[in-house]
Image 1: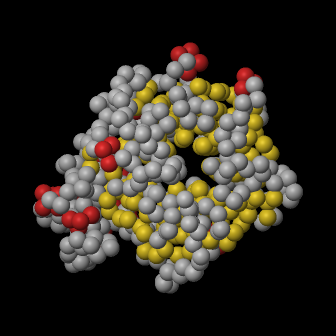
Image 2: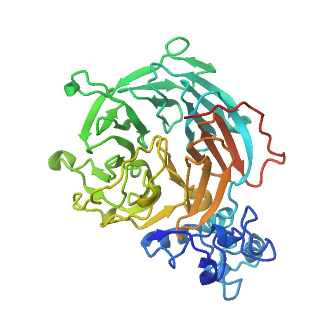
Image 3: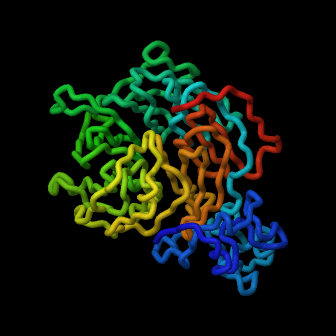
Length: 486
């Protein structure tokens, strides 16, 4: 299912999908969150996403059916907060309290779109943004060898300032251990470094004030060949790391044994992104410049020696994958300027279909996406839906599901090379918000797991936060001299 712009969609649906509050008593009619006419921002909606994930999302983020009946004839429309509260007071649901889905239904309409407020400002490009699982810490990685960890609960004070060791090109990725005691960082090198962030010292200079142990991901048969690591992630139990590399491989590192436990020659080009599918750690998702997403089942890989399945649909390389955490669904960002939603139960045993000959040449690092390629479609697209509007150029831009706790994973969001952050409705494809502030590429952004706070990091060096409703103070952005990037 493709979601593309259409001015007639609002009339077809009878209400505006890009509005977060549909009750005319509590919002301005006909306007979206930025005051623009809804039809100018609305994407075409082909009914609703006709798939199991649609029902799962509604169960996570929809109000109790008795509460939804408060508005006669509008059971599919969001129920205002005031009427939700009135329904709870009247015990419409029979429970005397809100369920987690009721809470998500109210919280999910309050998107983090106010601001931004400046968190930090550096003189080098920001590449990585990451909240800890509980939202108490925030990690930002910069090209100039710096990784900063901010204590969110203490006014975003810098808790740890890490100066990376043996950095090649930039900090490509970071990952925080589940117990929040260790951080790993990667660059264009086979060595991943691990830092103890629980120490009292604020300054962490590699092997000067603190030890940054190196974990060697090169295999015995590499024969001195050097490669870079684009993506690294901790397993849920904190015992393993999984990494994707420029030598077309996936690596699994056993932290307890302190050695490489598995190497998979996974793709025919760079593996830009990897992640575990769920808490079990059995399934691994990977995305590559060969335009394929693959699923790897470690329980049977040794006997089969091949992926459990392949997902086809993108026309260009994959820049990032985010798992929904249920072992079934994932989203992928791609250089074909789209995000796709997948169900691994639709995967093929191998790549049986190719997009065909490409009659244009381009390099996403310095060229715009060719006009003639924008309407092309993969002949064997297995994705559930496709989301377009953002731009994936210059670098490996990332996308994510919105938090389960506060939104029921009702949205997906992405950085963009046009300096904005885009938020889409998962089920309808509507572009519900565009956050504008940065002056250069937004490679990464991250939504707080519990509160309507989103932090974006850009090549302009700014780390800024967006909130709802805000902190009571006007946004304060320091004046700066902007550098021009080629």
